[in-house]
Image (cartoon, rainbow, N blue to C red; front, top):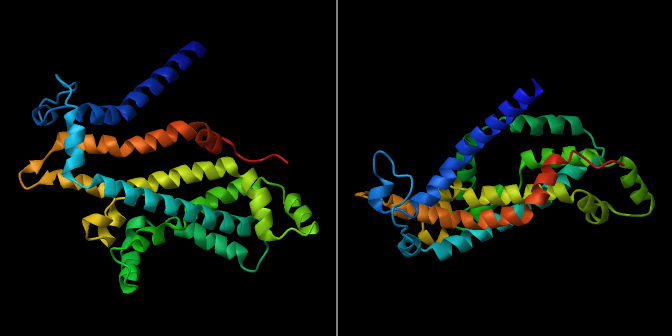
Length: 272
């Protein structure tokens, strides 16, 4: 019975892996097809002759160098901002005692239930009233804090004994010094995971950039993919080539930091 369960578990994992990976693999195969192959019915799965020139044509169709620069800048600064605000907020919630702390935590937890689509237009009104439309500030500002990551980090920091903080205070260590010298090194796996996930979110951001920007020079990579849609249809093969180019940096990032990401997700806390 044990062998049967093991076989069924492995079969289920293989099937789910194939379902998950198929869109990604098909995107790469489509990027090497001709327009006719990419739009044929029934679908063509493998290109007869790989069309490597699709990548060069895709790069000529839109200012992808500019899009790359914008995306790296926005995703990078958003990641740094989120890390700073999350660790400060999580530290305050875990290590400090202040009035109405529980009420604040409950209020923040309630905000997690509010869908992003509900707040996006309020944020747009705020950015518009501040005169920040079509600027990098508009792209970055709303992404500088995340309640989800504050709670994620709070749970991680809870496992760090309070005695560490009290001992540091007795030695004359200030709060910021404690965060810099003790808390950040101990929470490094969690911060790695947060950083990578936040960067990926910023990289794939689509709705917010298209709302607050109105010129090509300020658009991100995900918005640039719409350049392949024309009045006569969509150049699917070029769009797939551009999509493949767009995910290469994320794949490289994952391959470099995959151990840290997995460790940060799996590790539940630091034992004192």
